[in-house]
Image (cartoon, rainbow, N blue to C red; front, top):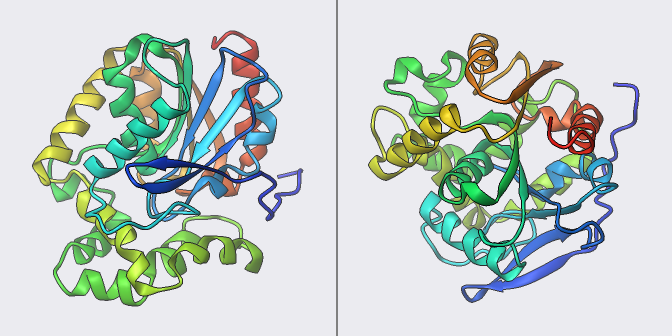
Length: 301
């Protein structure tokens, strides 16, 4: 990494009223219509994850990066925080921002649960999708043996009543342990403070507990498993242009699995970022931003 990784968040806050709650998002402006790039984060992050990627892409496109409900600077309503809830809030937000299936081409930059939400939306609105940039995305596991071995026992525990809630709600394990352990470099105190801020109070950690319980494993939860099955099948057959970023050793996407996707995804450029675990945006943001920018400049080729 030759360029410094900034800890500050250099974007003006924007808020939209979505289903009675305020949803925060980054919006770099409409200076380059009709090209819009939408960045979606996962657990336990926020739009802050993209802070060093967006400045590269914003030179050529309007960049929008929302905070999922309960994350970042978005409100924390009393909802179940299931993937279906997040999908509903996202659908309304995109409509409010003028991002609709009938209006132009949208490029999605997706990670973790943001990838599940984005791929599900893209599958249902393929005609308006110009491109997909993917990294460490959620896939179904037909059995627990198909789930990454390094995290298997931990995530089994997260789905165990009482144990999972104690570890995530009381101990804030997703923020304090999983997040820093899933970055190769050491996150600074300032960066950790940004990530801790939405979850200072245990009652606000409910979304970080719900997501591991939503992972599509061994057919459960049935609705999420069906959603993941549908978007994975679509992803493998669609000719929508793709950038696929992966690191070594990876986390959700192992090196072996990454090689399989590189061979089997259509219209796809595979990019090995180097050493990386799950949050590769914290280790290689400039490479990711520069590759997306060059891809856009080439007309998504």
